[in-house]
Length: 78
Image (cartoon, rainbow, N blue to C red; front, side, top):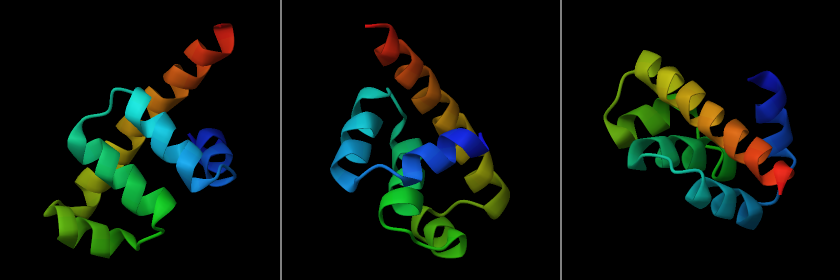
């Protein structure tokens, strides 16, 4: 997941928002990625904002990154 995370960090904010919208993420997954990659909030701040634990944050982040990864692979086939 490090490679996909590095790839996403190189994209601009508008592209990230569009990609997150089409990746069929759940609301909380969307916000974990938005706060982490677009707004660049600290993990603790995001956890307090979403009322989740730090461990659950990383579970959600990995799950969301997997969904984004497969959406990118799907888009490359077109």
